[in-house]
Image (cartoon, rainbow, N blue to C red; front, side, top):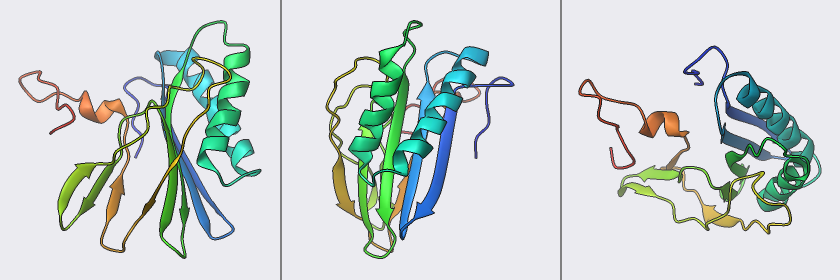
Length: 164
């Protein structure tokens, strides 16, 4: 589900299946309103385009970054989690470009996945993004989200935060 705080926003998600692999992404553009929405649309288009040429999450992110960082006069950036799940083997390859950490949920409990610290997209061209790999079992669930979840407030105006 995607529900913007305003009529238009900078959060994004997308997914598709190619060659028995699920390609998916979630992201959050800096800023709000129309500029963030336009930046989000460009980023989503670049994700689709890049993912048709490779199944490497780090290469997808690198391609998006090189395109966006080149002419980024407004100094906008996007945090993004890109995953490629092999639907037959259960192997998830992912690259987290400064986004919230993914959460792995199973009978053992709930835990943040350890991730390499990559910078957000658009901050600096030439950055070498690193991807990670994890084998997902049938009893495991992956939760990816934007800061709209962690920055939601309870009735006392307290942020939910990462732990909650």
